[in-house]
Length: 78
Image (cartoon, rainbow, N blue to C red; front, side, top):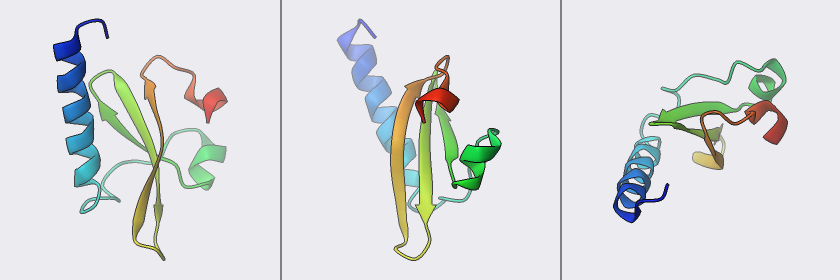
């Protein structure tokens, strides 16, 4: 993102959506890629970006693993 104001708004939106995962961690779908799904990867879409995370039940934690541009080949990257 070249415009600093747009980047700031995007970061605020991503952070806000991630914070909501504290309450609604299971509300997002698993990724479609079967090996990643078996490992517990879930995906949250924010504008043109994908936020990948896992839920650790025992620790009551949401672990953000990556934030990638939507056109990225996430199967290769993750």
